Image (cartoon, rainbow, N blue to C red; front, side):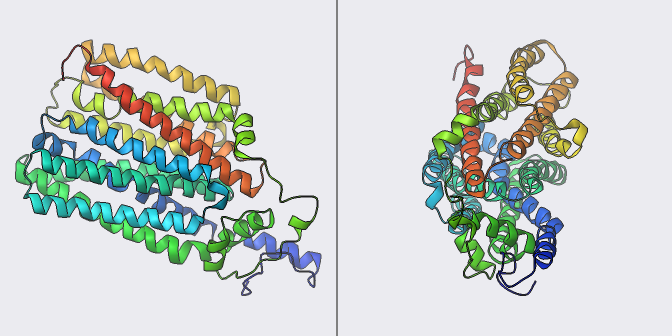
Length: 431
């Protein structure tokens, strides 16, 4: 395994040796790779989830600006536009540079939250709020680099990597929610206490993002299983993995398959979308529904109950924990939803939650609201991972990368439309 190109087919080796090397390369470092993917997924949204989780601090500072809705809505156009541009040019993009640039921007944005708060001395007003929205936009640009880039890259590897990455994305929400409970319990519910909690979140976020930069740059590309799948993708005509292969020690890769049987030919994005429109629609519908309720409706429209100021935090934590659990349910084979018709039916059926949330907020108690929020998160996580692990099956490496980017684009389009739809709950209530 010491040779830099030991994962390709070498003409002077026997077939038995080839099979043995391929078998080892396909599994060596798999569990370490799964853990790194989880951390990379965590870093993908940790910073922005931190901004959402400390919404009580921003509501305190900017009570007239609806920060839970404005911050989310500011974030969405930038992540959607950035992802759309990269998806269009996906076949020619250097995935390594794209992902490293995204994680670096995550780090700088998290650091920017701290700097802004220090410069403004934790005061409210329009200028600091514009600064917060600018940082949210930077988070969106970073997410546009990373989420599609990582999903496309991991889609050409084993399904466990995609599942673990999106498990990490959900874990970032669960971890920030848990940390928010801790800071709220430790610090008094005052301006200084809220501010200390916000700064703690941003500091932890900086650490996570820097860790992600180092892991993706120095550790992940050198795992044998990662080098195997990227070498396989390169042999099928992929140009996006070249820099990552070089980082893993593979300077040049024989490409015998590309010269035979026209393997280098691949379906274009339009053809891939036509064949997978139901999967794309699944992603869009799942996130339209989720973001039309979370976090804006849960934060501002669920009324007051016996939990008091803890109520919103409990609801957000319920969603995040359930979303995390839902993303691991497909690991249980009996619970994994693989039917394309079943996935689409489930995505459409979730819209029944809209009247359920409306009437529960109006007439129900907090127990019913927590149960509905948990169901929202559970179904969101389960359907997300089921679609993203099923869709790439049967395609070549370059097509899997392109399809991963396309599905994330529809996911983010659903988030954008859902964030806009979230404002419909304010009809009849004034600004």
